[in-house]
Amino acid sequence: MEFVWLIIALAVVVYAGDRLFSYFALKRVAYMCRFEREAAFEGESVRLIEQLVNDKPLPILWLKVRLQMPLTLKFENTAFVDISDKQYYQRLFSLLGYQQVTCRHVLNCVKRGYYVIDDVDMISGDILSGRRCYERVPMNMHFSVYPRFIDVDDVLIPARLINGDMIVKRWIIEDPFQIAGFRDYMPTDSLNKINWLATARQQRLQVIKHDFTASSSMIIMLNVTYKSSWVNYNVLEQSIRLCASLAQEAVDNGIPVAVISNGLLKGYDDAIHMETPLGCSNEHMTGILEDLARLTFEYEDDFSVFLSGEIEQIPYNADILILTSYIDDDLAAAIVDIDKSRISVRMGFMEDVDWERYELNDVDVYTITEEGAIK
Image (tube, rainbow, N blue to C red; front, side, top):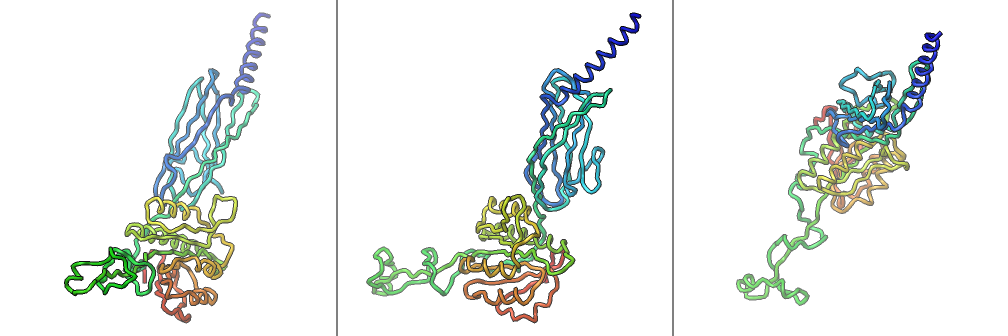
C-alpha cells in the first residue's frame, strides 16, 4: 500500500512540476535580435545576432523560437531554416536558470531592398499534458540592402562638371576668384577694386574684371515605369544600380548630385516618391543609397507627367540625366518642352528603343545594356 501511495505522490509531484514549468516558462524571458550593421550592399554578407535570456532561477525545459525572414536574405547555414513560399528560422532551446544564449548567423544579401522584421514567436510548455504557452515579441527591426555599384563610362557625366565651376556668358554672379583681365575705372566701381600695377602700366585707373560663373550640378531622374504587360525587373534593377554608380562617381569628383524618381519609397505611411536634394558629401551619398534601397516600382504619375511637374524645380545650369527603359510620344514631348538653354539634358535608355524617330534636339542619347556597358 505504501508503494501505491509513493507512486501517487510521485505522479502528483511530476504533474505539479510539469504545470509549474509550463506556467513560468515564458516569465522573465527576454529575446533580442539585431543585425551587426544597419545596411549592406547586394552580394555582401551580414551577421544576424540573437540573444535569449532566462532571468529567473527556474529552468526552461524547452523553448521554440520562430522568426520569419525575407527570402532574399538567405541563411548560410540552413539547418534551422524552413523554406516554402516564405523563409522561417526556427530553433529549439533549453535554458538553465539565469542563463543567456547568444547565436550568430550569417545572411547573404541576395537582392536590393528595405526589409522589416516585425516580430518573433516564442512557444514553450510542459512535457506530459501537451499544454502550450505562446508569446509574440515585437521586434520592429529593419535592414537596408543597397544596390551594388557597376562600372560606368565617364561619358555619362559631362566632362565640364569634372572641373567644378564653369565660365558662362550669361550673368549669374560675379566670381572674385575668376579674373578675366582689367578694364577702365567707372564712377560706380569701388575703390578697393582698383589695381595699381595695371593703372601704372596703362596710365589710367584700372579695375579687375571678373568672369561670371555658375556652379554646375547633376540631377539623375530615374523612371521606374515599364511600358509592357510583362515587366523586366532585371532592367529596372540595373537602372537603379547605374543610378547609384553615377551618383557615387559625381560625389567622388565633388559634383553636387541629386536623384529624383517617380517610384514610391517603402517604409513610410504616406506615398512618397524619391527626391533627394543636391549634395556631394559622403553622408549625402548614404542618404541616396538608403532611398534607392527603399525604392519600389510602384508609382502614382506616369513619368512624362512627373517630369513636367519636376522640371520647374531644377536649378539653373543643371545637367539632367534621364534613365528610362522606353520613350513614347508623351515623354518625348515633355523632353522637347525643356528649356535647353537653361538645362542640359542627357538620356540613358536601359533597352534598345526606337528613339531616332523623335526630334530630341540638343539631347545626348546613350543606350545601356543589362551588363552596364554603354553604346
